[in-house]
Length: 318
Image (cartoon, rainbow, N blue to C red; front, top):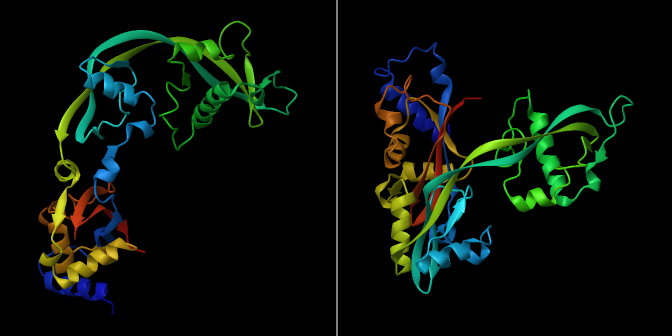
């Protein structure tokens, strides 16, 4: 009998008389699984960015303009990235919190291109079509987005909505409208992509877009203060290694590898770990009915001076 089996067996014997579990229930076959994966340590290495290396070349302009006391606004595109969490940067020894707020809304019209499947490219019944490979790199991307959206219609699995919008490609920038050969007079009605002929549908549609204003606030003068701010914002649990039992520490080591799981009722060591992660809902409630969910519980834990992302989820026992 290995350590896990020993712990679980001991818990089952101790709690069998008070668990109130019907052996015919499927609940007894489910395991609460814990995994730990390395998180950036220190947190500054992940959350404090160099604006010269961010995805948008306009981040530096947004920062400097706002720092100088002027308003920097954007339409639809959120300054400093789409992630709702704030971004932090260091400039001349000071750490700044970079964010954005919505200050207005505008109604605009954008062209939308959608593709619909006509048939195989080698079929005599399909109409003449321009080959996507003969289009510009920009228009090839438009066709690819339309292809992904068309392929997903009626099928399970979804589409990458960061690219696909309103079931196709939305031209949000006037310069993109001007350079695209898929719009305007003389634009093709059909395109061939990946051995399939697609019909090209064009519409002008109304959009309501947010106006964002960039915000820049000084938050720290030292790396230690910045790290404290990030801990307060992102860390869900802090576990002192010396405060855990030997079995609980061993369990966490296993969770860092292939993961660790037990069925209910849990061993004393697993209950100790769950309490340390503030996952008391999995202990104190009606575990057989209330806490069983397929949605994983995620968070960041500081353990032994290192940060980890933890995930708790229920799995069926093999």
